[in-house]
Length: 64
Image (cartoon, rainbow, N blue to C red; front, side, top):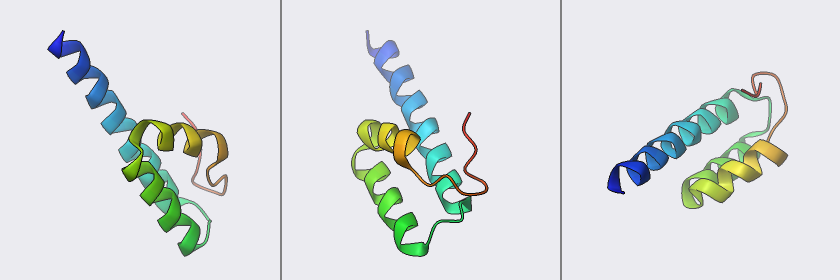
């Protein structure tokens, strides 16, 4: 049971890092980038979902 939760946690971590990198590469303003990164860090799962649905869509923010 612990391995499954660990694997899910690792996947969420990798996706959060991906979202943060893509946010930094986006054409969004600095303030928007900071807010998105804070949302992703404070709420890893919900923040990732919100970023995927509502996040910066500028150049460099290509989706998987």
